[in-house]
Image 1 (cartoon, rainbow, N blue to C red):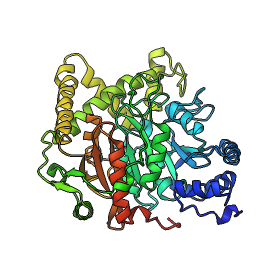
Image 2 (spheres, rainbow, N blue to C red):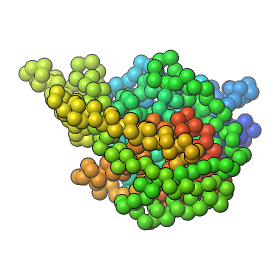
Image 3 (cartoon, helix red, strand yellow):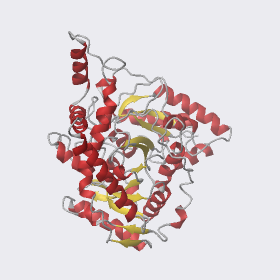
Image 4 (tube, rainbow, N blue to C red):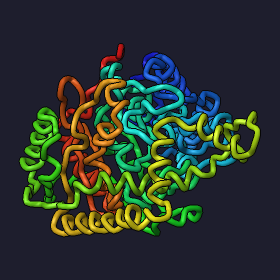
Length: 491
């Protein structure tokens, strides 16, 4: 059996699973090697909390399952978990001072399902506060750094989850996607990120931001790993009434079919002004791979309401955030300012000191949009336009299996570069947030480089057709090696 030091952490999760079943090394050795790697990457600031004791206990339990012949695809596999997901007895901060000292008394459903699958939770990953951000600079625990270039952002809000997978810290991680918070950091860090259909994965125990938009999903290094992790966490949950009673298929079943028969629409609205030339070239080259592999490409697809998606999102999401974050009043749990002369002063000081600038900005936008006299003009109108956007996606996917776009208009930008310009920051999610508004599933996979930084390819499918997303991604990865590229260990 190999030693911890000789375990190849560049392996994918399914390669580790094969090695574990063969007895090449134990789950405990893999966990110890992973923890050592993650500790050596502290400069990335990808984790808020390492769960070493839990990880080693779960690894020992995984070894027992492997010995008993009861191993599944995730048994013994290290996983990072975004610190927005409740973990019993383990600090869950949502990247905010507001939840200082909070230790949930229960596990969220997706974490329970990870445990049932035999996965090993390595730690809680860093994120933009309450998942509000596109760069992972809005965290009470400091910014995450992109492993390809530590002067750049990793994307957000699930930047820690993306960065640790890209840096070969863990082979898998979980994030949440409210307007692109899985797919955009996946693109900027050069990994696979899956945003499932709204209702495919339980949100029970996820610290709420915008309840009608967000979904939990996987980060992985290839489509097979993404399929295995999605299989483990997907499915109806009686604790979450928004989950759909849809069967969970074998997401790898169609992998052998490649691009055969795929009809792919390319909406020109996503290739307009604002898209960097290097990103455009990489995505166009990816379209060529699809076409050469036998997919039918149609560039006549129209999504005319797409330009309205950004203002629609920044009315609906802040409105829901305003309602969801009203519970943080300094009375029930978390941070509390207690030196005021009145209850009102203490509550005001608690929220003013406990929330960061971006969270306060969105609470104010949402509160304004929901206020008397403005509800119909802003929030209600945004919901009507949301219906138009959803119908456009339905129409576009009637005659197409997939829509193909860039994931983000640019590669990773510099730390601090857009912090003083919220609108410029919001534009980073321009291509991803329409999908959250519509509720469809989508995926980002690496498709090239621009200025030495990864570019992401974005695919969108019909509701509950994650299988086609993963199949197309697998076919593309079979013809390219962008997903196998790794940042230099010194980064």
